[in-house]
Length: 143
Image (cartoon, rainbow, N blue to C red; front, side):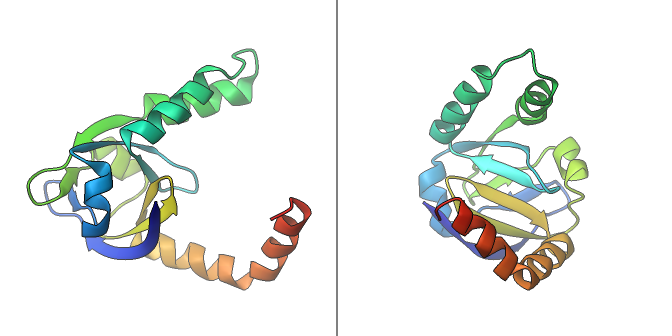
């Protein structure tokens, strides 16, 4: 289970150190793909397989399902952790998420999200401001 929020930096070669507490669960590798809200999603191979299966079973006759599958699957890249626990984020993914040097790695149960630090701070501030409204919506869903 991935939880927590960690500040890290991306080096000049595009390498990102995965927080130490997550390295064992990621084993020797992971899948990185375009996420939502202009961040990257990082999945274990097992979690990626579950998501890919669901995406593969969505009806291709619907434009939104095709678009979402393309976003997630075509943008995906398998990455390996080096001996220092770093992964290389491909340039096209760094560009998609507008990642600069400082990033935040956020644990969200079955995945990690990688955010540009300033984008994360803006998103977090807006979400915290609207937390009561968000909680009310979730109550309607039974959460």
